[in-house]
Length: 184
Ligand code: SF4
Image 1 (cartoon, rainbow, N blue to C red):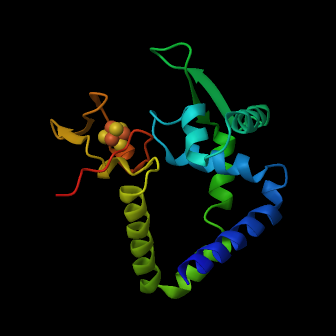
Image 2 (cartoon, rainbow, N blue to C red):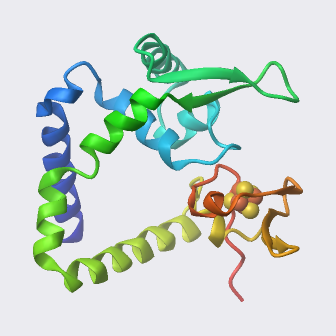
């Protein structure tokens, strides 16, 4: 059953991260926050968006973010327009750490052994995720390039919601404001 398979793989991943020597000082929730911040765009790197993505309480996430700041894995910077709002950026140290532990080695090795089947599996799982994001009442946190506000202006990516240009690399990031186009 699909659920059992996903649960087993998730559990193996959790154990692998817990036993990794580089992650000895990092709690699972802190690691989840780091992984989210590595994947999200500039509209989505706020404490509130992290809280929404992780589906945890504000207090729990706030404590974890403080711990990451103390460990110099993230830095806070005020929003250029709204000084009460802050953005969270990964430090170089955090990027090096994530680069060393992601994806988990056991998963990378297995997918290499599977070859083309792994590519097909990834595409099917992405479709499964999109299906859930489209139909369930959950924040989608989808990829920018699949958003209904995603546009091209003068040959460059552009956000129709914020009316701001986007970098080419931004379109592969996930966004708190993402919405799928309604299907006709
Ligand atoms: S186009 Fe959509 S996903 Fe991309 S930045 Fe704008 S709101 Fe976010």
